[in-house]
Image 1 (cartoon, helix red, strand yellow):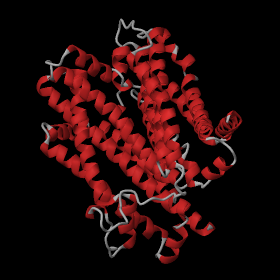
Image 2: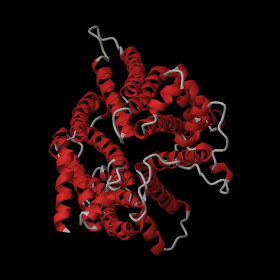
Image 3: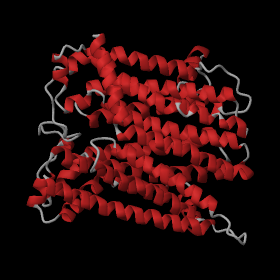
Image 4: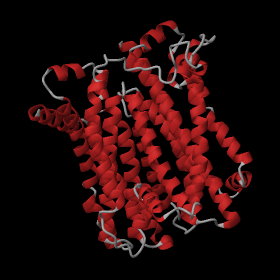
Amino acid sequence: MFEGTTTLFERSLRVDGRAFGPHLARLFLVSAIYLAIIFSYTTAVVLGAPGLRFFLNIVYIDLIFMTLLGLSFFSTSITEEKEEDTLGLLLMAGISSSGLLFGKSGGRLVQALLLIVVQYPFTLLAVTFGGVTQHQIQATYAAMLAYLILLSGAGLVCSTISKNNRVASIRLLIIVVGYLTVALACRRSLVVFPWLSNELRTIVRGVSESCIFLQIGPTMTSGFGESIWSTQVISNVLGGLACYPLAWGLFGMTSRQPATEAISRGLVSANARRIRILNAGRVWSSPLVWKDFYFSGGGFAAIMIRFFIYVLLYLTSIEIITSLFGPMGGQGERVRTGSFLFMTCLMMSIDLGLLLSRSIQAEVRGKTWTSLVLVSNSVVTILLSKLMGIGLSWLPGPISLVTGIYFTPSGLDVLREALQQDPEPWMWVLTSMIVIPHASALFATYVRWGALPLGICCAIASFFTTIGVIMASTYNSRGVSTERSAMVVVSLFVLGGCALSSLAVWWRMKTIASQS
């Protein structure tokens, strides 16, 4: 057992150490530290406490990076063996189930921990800048490491019970969303239901304090002196460690199934006797549009799920703004509506990136792209047909955005202010979001999994890079503000980069077709 475990553990470390992806992730995190220092220095005169701003920027980037890492890295430790049909060979080689689980997931957890821990000496600069203490930095890093352990354990369970990487990532995403939603609901219930007993209030408060996203704010408040072993740290570590024996207990039931294809039907059922909405039905006049609508986008069932997610997003945005800033009177309605519209645009960008990467990876990994090129007119025709198919599945996003503008309080006022007073910042933010689907589609032609997280990382890098450019060109040599002009120029450069990425996708898919 221990020999097989150490062998898999060592192999995992060697493979990740020689791969390009982990080194690229380290470069991204180091670049994030540099950009955070520039942003904190340039905004110190207006906002004050540059050390606190610098550290908060690093923490938010790390939390986004860790969540994306869990969805694409931890959730594929076992399913990648299932997709490669090598899980049975590993078991036949005498490696026990516990050795396989710990060997595969242990190396990934160590790599992820190293990515975060290596930042710790650099973040101590925040103490020198002022606004934050070393104890607050230690408490925050303890919270992030505990959250990483929880993601590792939950990802291992999802990877054990799932048939492929896609299903495992979706299940882990549901767990992360539930992790935040339950904590928000518990925090809200403490205010809405004052009649709760003391014992029940203690339990509900403990659940709300177990979410790292809700504990970063109290940790960064002045005068923080609590122990680093908070409720969130203890609960996340215990939850992550409890997932390992759970995965071991479920491994025997899920590993007996024969290997499945890497490309699944998702929410679409092949059994006509099941719910009608889950059936693909007859092929449309455009087979490629029909195929991508159902098997890449999920069909009508996925559309209903997306509408539910956007409604939940609206309620979540209201709760977050209310908990952070209070009622705020009439101005609070505009803030809540503006935050919902911003989060909707971000969700639309991520959803489109997910659909595009899934559609392209399905053809590349399934080795069906050459056949499509042979039976269709051209590569451009196929790509446009696939874009139309996933565009139908993506419609809940634009519909929710238009509904939020016309039917939510102050929706039209927020849009009018954005277009009349400050259109350049909105243009800059929206063009940064466009990077996600374009970069995800491009990465999907090269990598087997993780195209969406790489696309989001590119969008974050583009966002902070443009901040540096705008800050550097805020004033020209004559002292005249050129901030808006810089935003327009940066937006045009981002749009040009997205256009080049579209051409790169076309060229890459044409190359794949000629090489097969």
